[in-house]
Image 1 (tube, rainbow, N blue to C red):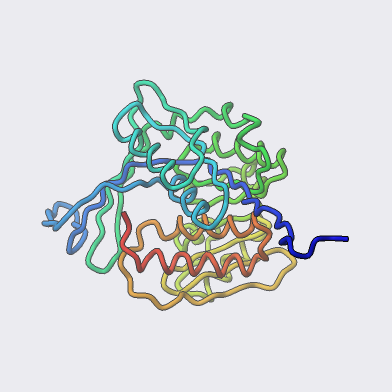
Image 2: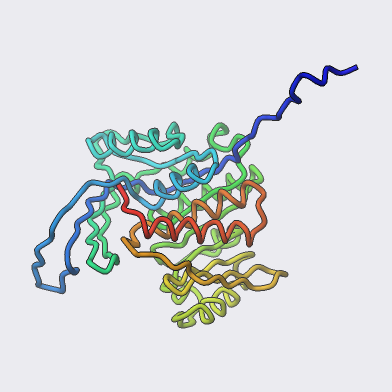
Length: 301
């Protein structure tokens, strides 16, 4: 006979493991009425340091979405590197696999955000170019891993080594092909989900992307190389296509725009955390769309 007065045991919730291999940047954010044209000086009205790098931002987003996020990358032995490691830890990301490169400068960027909430940026990769591809074979990095997130702010040899290790571990491979660069077939063959914005979709597909419909056409065209494709079309919304499944188109959610900086990274981290959790693809896409909407309407620090 059981004691009905005792509460039933509840199984602990196990967070899905998402590995992020990629860039870490110390961002200097400058607020200005507009971005300068060539040869022009614009008077800004404020600046602040910010944790960044597409890899770092995506790891933080995945952690916020409920994943156990593990970051693999590199920083230098400087104050920027210390800042980046502290922020990773403070935001719930496992940073044990971030190498500290003696004598190297950490990656950094300068981003100018204008009065309309849009921005332009210059990155200096620094230690991100010194990530050792061989370090990505560490068994602890892949223990129980469900998914891998990659971007194009580190050398392709790093992405290729990470994708091979992820496949060996049975993890889903997501590539955010940003910023655009030609993509080798060896890496493309290992990618399960490609995420690109309108510009990157145009470069990879050869099709112009100006609205949600054309984003969907570009996504479908890219299915010749990838199992699944997501094209984020800014204020128009997001389109997705997968082999053997109906296409998906979602309008952007109405928001009061503060800044678009980091919006794509918040989208990717939330999308992959959802996929790793076993949430259906379309529902994961919807959650990512909502996450990006919150991001662009919230002041970032």
